[in-house]
Image (cartoon, rainbow, N blue to C red; front, side, top):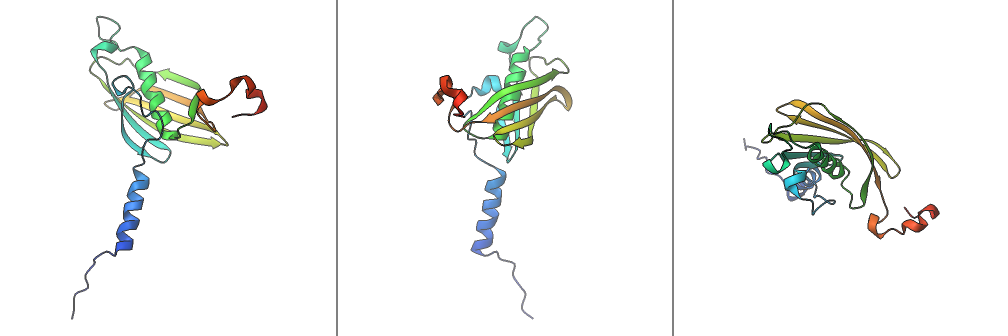
Length: 162
């Protein structure tokens, strides 16, 4: 009796590659962000992003080593924008909670998930943690525009040019 081999066809291999590419998308927004201050993109999927921020001495605000909340917000915002992953996404609002202090040397891991889509609007929930302790939680409201925000004629915005 002949053994059946389980070699994959070229079509099966191509399909697996396409699925893998869908899971690991290319970043299409905020490509020139300063990763030192806004974190590194660790994972990107449709509607999901994971960003890690290693806090440094230049983020310190006092002799105790407290990190300024603006850096935490920036990394959370970057995670939210990456989860939406559109070149024309802009932040329109945010509700944030700083739940625990972050110290110089801490690595904060942010997970962002798109929770709601309505037309051009997206709501993205972001949680930032240090060693599984939640230190930051936010809901970012974003809008996906037709073109880059700096290319819009904002003087005629009332005419519906978004």
